Length: 118
Image (cartoon, rainbow, N blue to C red):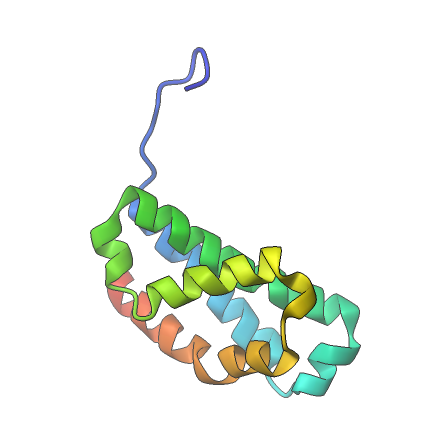
């Protein structure tokens, strides 16, 4: 705890909102794109990976502050492990795996988060 600042527990909704925002952003910016775009456009790749890291970190923080809510997110442990892989195993990430997450997992996560935030 920093001097002069009382400890405040984060509202779990903040993490859910942050994850939802990242999902929506990623679904928007990847629409019409391909794994080839991801592989060849460094700026695009960096943006995609950063937002995926943000999703994993927000979920990791949520699990730390409110494990019951985090457990309601399907594949929560996989999402957190994927974040760790993006951060710590950046040199071994397969583009096809990242693109599979974009194409086949993000919509489901977005839908879950929207339901949880209602």
